[in-house]
Image (cartoon, rainbow, N blue to C red; front, side, top):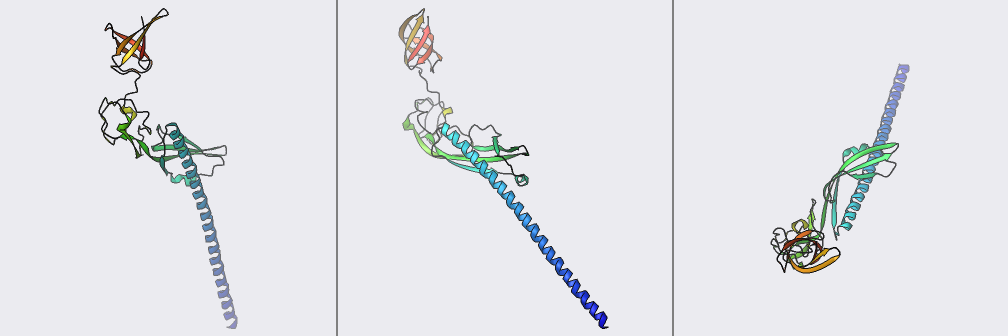
Length: 261
């Protein structure tokens, strides 16, 4: 009886030890898997953050370049990136990422498409990303209602800060609008778009002009009246003030046209 009791006690001690070892091993494996998963998640998060940083910098530089060319002043961009979840499964790129445009927007405003590429010999992949950009900046608007055919003056305009979420034709200075005529009625507070205005003519209908006629090296000048608007190098109809004859002449500069005998 003593022998059996001793063996039974040893058996129970050995079984408890094995259970303890299994439990400890399970804890170690679980901890290792957690650490591995946590490390992978951190790497994926770091990769996504790096891509966001590069793309954000690229879009901001694109906006800055366009702003410098088009005289945008005191503008504030708002950029939203829609990065697909598949980025978490992409391997790290050993080279600088390449970012290219995949849309036809002339202005960097609204819904943009960008492609991010890794072109390393040992690692190549592409990712399409949607970018939404809004721009807030001061633009020229009508201070009062401007009727059709009205010549634009600085008293008719004011600067007002506006936010654009889609491409829009606007100007940030008065100078490019002054002297032009409205092709349509522009309401008070409405953006004065260049497309609403006729170009700045060197000669306008009704202007008195100097007609210079040339033939075989000889020139003669007389006065005339412009019958239509004209820009440089355009042909317009001009009435000879003396004879009343209407001729075609080429606009050379403000108030002057040329024709051949």
